[in-house]
Image 1 (spheres, one colour):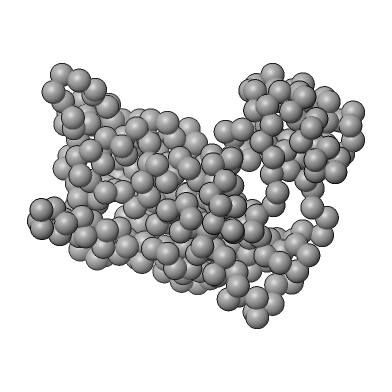
Image 2 (cartoon, rainbow, N blue to C red; image 1 turned 120 degrees about the horizontal axis):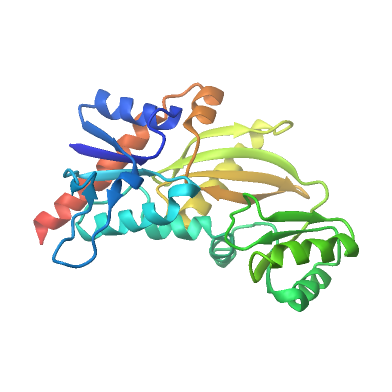
Length: 284
């Protein structure tokens, strides 16, 4: 089977391990920089161009899209989907997970415990949101950053005003979330095909807590329709919560902390999806 890994970092640990695992399983592998691909819209051309020529044919795609390549990379995944080429995580699922507001909406809609967050627009909306949360301290985050930059912790009303002025100058909508006292990092889980394959526990976490953290991580990935995800979990007031769902998990972290080969099951799941797609087309 022909497998394509979309990645701007061909020598990174995660990309390299996925390519090694795919070749070890007998598949042909290409690592393609999404920025080297041109998406042609119109003129009867549907297949993307790679370095000026029609992109090589492939059966499936494993996206490793960082923030710098997100918009172009997602457009490329959508174009491949139109050609019937499945991706381990679809463009739509990645986009939902990376939008903090959309991700939290889905998590709460599926009754998955996550810290309370309010979406506010403009100065008045932010002030009202902070009041609803009981006042400072709060964290203000610019919508669309996914928690990576564009956020400030406000300990007082004065610092909140300064933060609002800075952040609203870059955008119109902010996420407002309380600073929950006593929250501690619990674990990070790698979910593949709906199952947790690795769980790296935080300090102080007991082995007896593993089952509920595993169930919560699997539910979060399922709610966001992600085949591959890293789920960050925390404990607050004796209950686990989902802090973040990442579509670009670090195999370096999981393989080294858990001592497992995790690249192989990821490749196997991608191949399983591609085979199911081929079988469905054959039945039509």
